Image 1 (tube, rainbow over the protein chains, first blue to last red):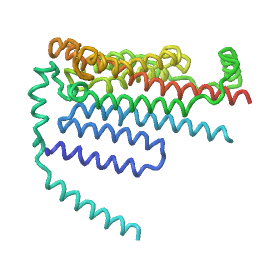
Image 2: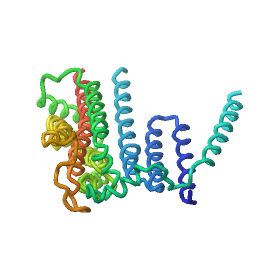
Image 3: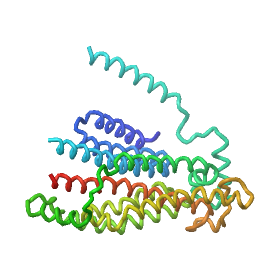
Image 4: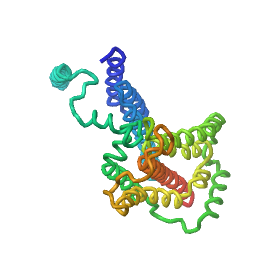
Length: 82
Length: 257
């Protein structure tokens, strides 16, 4: 592993810790998006551009989007109950 | 006590992890024969310069059929769970009316900022173009139907963010999205069966291979990517439209109380 790869590897570890340590689900969805982006960079640096693209699309876009939509639904339901 | 346990567990984990890492083969080493074989055959045999796509959509095309339908079923499931519980009987007219009442009562949704509008509009053309490129060049460069499909689906989303839910529903009517998406999913099976009709195995690459590094080359790999791209885009747009429709509906329900 080269210098760059080790750096991104550490960045993945730190941002994963960030996702776990974030308590607010809304902030967490943004954190998980960033984590997905960093992870895709790691895949790309290991010569797997196909996997990196899937990772960007699923991990950095689709997953946070679904979490956001679900959160907005839960939020609206709570509001309705009041 | 808890911190102590965590520290002990963490130290053990780190030790095992480092031990495992130390025993890994060097980066880039590959002991199996399969990958090297495919590397030397895929370009000549299938005119596909992206061997990953050649594996996904040709040599292992049957697995991708399963993957595609995993997505299809999960979208169908989510749509079923979030289906409208009560159909609004009075339809479009009262919707507009209640929206007007909403506005008068000062409950209108906050207006979209100019920056969001401009950025959203600028993004639409780019995402459509990039999505189509991604889908149509899956056999030559990294990418393909799955990735391109999701990129394509973000175009209506930026329309929704730049304009409103009504515009989203107008450019992506739910019935059309459902129909096109399902047809594209079915096309995978149809293409597979076409090979059977021609006397080969299910999903054998029977369409013309064309010239390598050109759009539309590699026969089935291109056509399957196209179908998967449309299906994935349709699935994601459908999910978005379910959520957006529900948000509209809810506003109306609250209004009617």
